[in-house]
Length: 235
Image 1 (cartoon, helix red, strand yellow):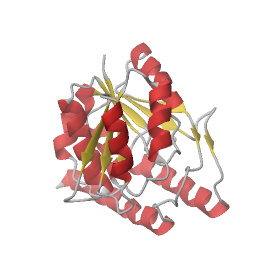
Image 2 (tube, helix red, strand yellow):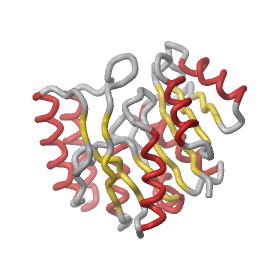
Image 3 (cartoon, helix red, strand yellow):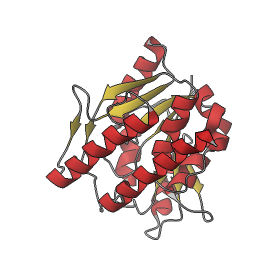
C-alpha cells in the first residue's frame, strides 16, 4: 500500500521545509511530491535540498501553464504514475496538519468510501483565527456548493483530502480548472461518479508564513463557476 502526498506550492519558501519535515515525521512510509509553479521566491530550491537527502521526496517543477488547478492535475497524474494506492493533497503553508493522514487512511480502510475530506465544520473540527466576514462568506459558500452539487458535505471547500487510486483514475483526464476552483471541480466529479465521500474532523491552522492567496471576491467568483459547471450537464 503506497501513499503519495501531493503538495502544490507557490511562494511557500518560508513554510515548505517544516511541512515536509512534519509529513515525514507523521507519515514515515509516505512519499512526498511537491509540485511547484516555478515560485518567484524559489520554493523549489528549498525542496531540492530534501530531494537530495531523501529518496521518498520528489519535486515536480512546472514552468508552463502555471496555476493552482493545473498544478493539482499534474500532481495527481504524477502520483498515479508512481503507483500510488492512496493520494493525499494538502497545502504547503502549514494550515493542514499531516498528523491527520493516518486517520484518513484508517477511515478509508475501515469503511466503504472512495474519498476522505478533512473537515473544519463537523463535530471535532476547528477553523483557527477567522474574522466574522470570512466566516460568513465561507458558511454561505459551503451551503451554496452543497446545494448546487447535491452533496451532503459540511466542508466542500477543504483542500485537505485523500483519494483512492481508482477514484482519480476515473476522472483526472476530465479536470480543466487552472485555479483553486479545482477543489470544487473534483467534488463535482466525485458526485458525478457516485463516489462515497467521508469527512474527518481537522483543525485548520494559521499558515506558517506569508499571506493567504484566496480573496473573498475570488471565492464569490467561484460560486458562479460551479453553477456553470452544473448547468453544463444539461447540454
